[in-house]
Amino acid sequence: MTLIESVRQQWFSNVRGDLLSGLVVALALIPEAIAFSIIAGVDPKVGLYASFCIAVVISFTGGRPGMISAATGAMALLMVTLVRDHGLEYLLAASILCGVLQIGAGYLRLGSLMRFVSRSVVTGFVNALAILIFMAQLPELTDVTWHVYAMTAAGLGVIYLFPYVPKIGKVIPSPLVCILSLTAVAIYLGLDIRTVSDMGALPDTLPIFLWPDVPLNLDTLLIILPYSAALAVVGLLESMMTATIVDDLTDTSSDKNRECKGQGIANIGSGLLGGMAGCAMIGQSVINVKSGGRTRLSCFVAGVVLLLMVVFASDWVGQIPMAALVAVMIMVSIGTFSWDSLRNLRKHPLSTNIVMVTTVAVVVATHNLAYGVLAGVLLAALFFANKIGHFMYISSEASSDGLERRYQVIGQVFFSSADKFTAGFDFKEVLDKVTIDLSRAHFWDITAVGALDKVVLKFRREGTEVVVIGLNEASATIVDRFGVHDKPDAVDQLIGH
Image (cartoon, rainbow, N blue to C red):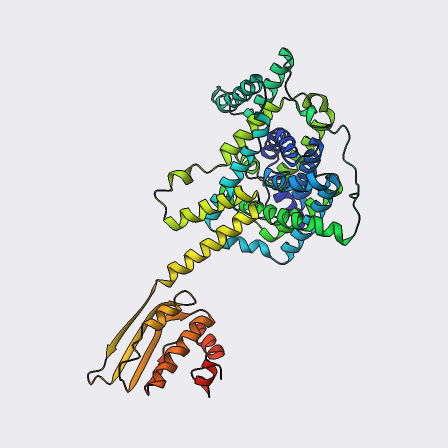
């Protein structure tokens, strides 16, 4: 495929659908970018600049056309402590370092590690994200007047009921209708409730290039590195998971390692333009695909339209009541949560449920999605190893004269099943010869090889001749390399003399 054909396919093969979906996404991005800024404890313009920059840059550098990346709640939640303790400039520096780490992850091809994250971990990750987004709205709903509760309830009513309006219900995004209608009501009634402008100054100019005003020394690096590492891991996890979801929705494949590098470049750009780090957005990406977006153009349009609307209509955006944004974020939380996972608790195996619930519990307790995913992956690996370890069976058959015995090993021999392998042999039986048939077994690690050595040498110590047959090529390679039972002084090596 030539360069021109590639550009045409990735940018201009679906112009009408991408322009319309880009507009819809831009409108939906404004309240979310502002809300995520507020979660992180920074001015709304930080999230808005970030969403513009990340969406535009990733449209050129990303590996998944049609996926939307911007400022996100998962990333904002990790920034709260850094902003509170050290301020905005350190957040910008952390965003740049996060981008550098993500580019490194792309070159190390860590995108392919997503295959080790099980479905139950992904479900737990998504559910925990939904819970944290909901919890972040609670400060806006405590110690407030009844007007705020009424406006929030009305906003949720509009969001969930407007799509049922004939003809226009499916065309105009209901979160946008919620924001416009509640803003109009608040202005008309002159309600004294918190608005977006109360949260900080909205941008009235285009973003400018600036280097974060932090000392370039080891102390600064030690402050931002833990946050940058967490942001990089969570950003890549959410981006890889979102890319997988969009792959399924569009029946196309994507370059996960290129996506890692693209996310990194976008976050560096965001930090240099006064924005915070971001990543792919599950909700917005699904909205984009469902609205007809397929190519890079949709993400580019979303970023550009977002900036133009905010810069040239900031007076209007500043009058949006916070209750409207809270309603939108509660909708995002409800839509993100996998309600099927609750219904499936009875159907799914106990181990699957434990992995999912543990992932959720660790994330909610630590407010760090990376810790939850790590705990989930480790648990899933342990359950899998335990399950596979049970799929091993040893049968035996004695000769007619009772002087020889043939053992047949069936299944996987590795660290989890090594003890069971050793226990399957009777060393007290007096025999002249033992044949161990491994034609239906596979040896995976040095623990398994050590178990085979132990069995062979124990028999030989009793004066029994041992013959090992049937090793497949892969098992034979690891046994020849690490095994000692066929080498001189084998017994001495095994017991460490």
